Length: 387
Image 1 (cartoon, one colour):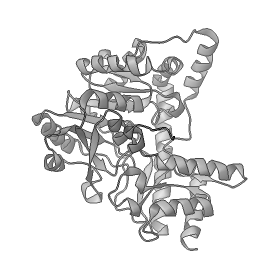
Image 2 (tube, rainbow, N blue to C red):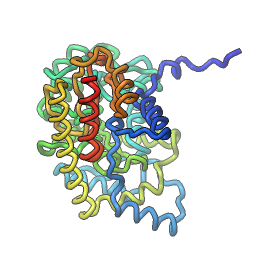
Image 3 (cartoon, one colour):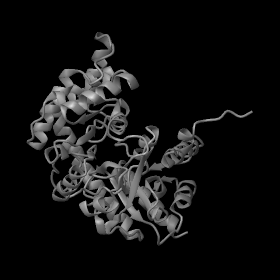
Image 4 (spheres, rainbow, N blue to C red):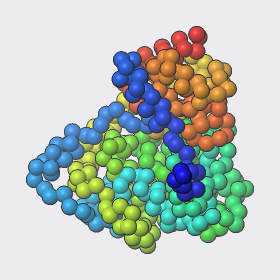
């Protein structure tokens, strides 16, 4: 007799780019040249200062559990960085350090969404968000958006789709997969609608610092009741260190800390202490240099994809993705990405990972590789579509 799994587990879908990456590794192990434009992981790695501090800590410091909300020196550093970046003051007690931004999303889902309720979110959007909600027996209500809406929710859309089972809205800015940045005035209008209906605004800001047209304000400065998520993975380049943070009211942080105690005890100790060095002036200068390199890569890839024939009506303003309309070449971008990998040795992510709205038409390309590799990948894609 076969073992029965929960309906909850069976309802959660795989992250499709991970399946592509596994196959890409098989091809690479067989000797194939594989170029990666798939996963959202910067190729820079952690700052040298962070790495050196981690080495020192391993040799000198017992790495015991920390408080579930994170060590106070790191909460203080994040609060100070918040004031430096945004000109907006928060208390360290409003900061909850988490085991990656994913843990922050899990805690926020558990805090604000009751069973059988839902959050409003854009389609396309980050695929794991709806899976976090599924784990807490809730769901997402995906709202179809495209370039006419800047791939973002609006106050009008939130009003239109809000119903008696809506617990709030989840916004990502800059967004994955589109790189779209929401206008602060529109974010304020959304916050007002959510507040009027007694809901909670959850805002994913993990790509803050990686915007190419100026700094965007944090949602907590617009809505003090918002729950804002951030990460050391993107701007700080610490993807494998599994460290993120949440900024919210002190009351919300206290509740999420209680949940974190039970789910994972504490964030990684080594990562927390090493991350203190990420806020030093020389490290911050390095991150700004890296941002300029990412902007150059964006411009290179954008021009190349347009020349090949992809339709990209909006230039992405942040993150490190281009969400390209591939309908000139295929009506099944999922199958197209597998063919691109097998025939051309290039990894890209199908739109099916990010929702259902026109997903068969779109492919996400991540410019998290060197300019040389991006140029080579573009040449391979151009040859592939002409085959």
